[in-house]
Length: 257
Image (cartoon, rainbow, N blue to C red; front, side, top):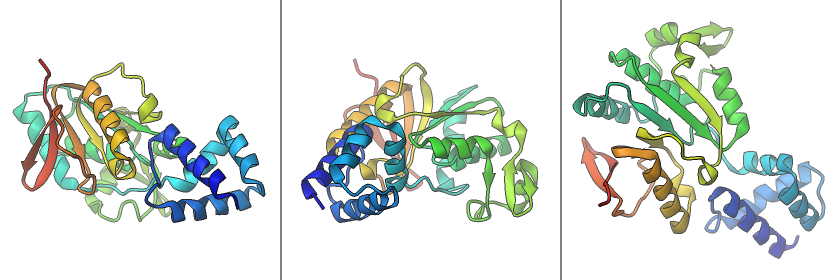
């Protein structure tokens, strides 16, 4: 095993995705070794060369290292806060970004929550770097684990049961557009009132956190809001006001003069 080669692969992966394993190198080395063995690469530098030139190999590594897993109605308190902000700010047609969206659990949860509370005019863009996650999100088929916290009465309303699985009702899908994209290469053509970004910042080093915040700043409309997970630590940024509401921390865009 060439440690220098492994370090180069970690650096390359970090440059492509912004995700760092600098403090989890042992885990990175184990996962990388397992993947190379499964793909029958016995020379690290051969794998590294293919990784740089073959998108399929890169996606194998991405799938190995990035967990696209969530469940419905995760951190439900933020949805209640979103509802209140929409009403307080009198946003008649909110534009929402969920990024990364994993397998679609979060954007579908937001849509269901808003509809259940009488907000019927909105659209959600849902973005993830993992193309397999986006494919699953578009298919909208989930098992019992993802729906563990989901109320039974809402299952009947928003899902079609197929044996032991549940498929999102077609009418719900019209509210959400799914895209495969890397945040750091994302084309910033649209502006959003609200952005949900769960469990991304915990994987980024400080430089990439600042870059991500700059991107989200550019994607938000004036006085828009950024929602992050409780496990995402962000330093106070001059571009955002840190606001605590009902023990929930959110970030409000500060318009620069």
